[in-house]
Image (cartoon, rainbow, N blue to C red; front, side):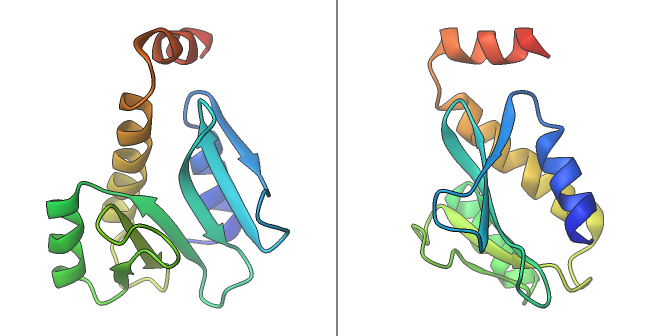
Length: 119
């Protein structure tokens, strides 16, 4: 996965926005003002940090060496994934969707409805 395809996938989520609140080296993707992904776009290979259910996060770390506890995040709820091709694209896609869904679910019902109705 390259940066352009990753950015397109993250921005395709309903209500998603891209920001750089931590400086130009980190692309932050938010929904409803809450972060669901952080891309270290200058890393070689590319890395993305994603929110995850704690038990699922552990299972993914056990299965894939490229999935590690979230760098500079709550390690129980976040994974950092090195996009070196060792994690199959459908698994990365599912991780992105799970992160987005977890963050969206944490928003108020009214805000969720506004976001989903706008797309």
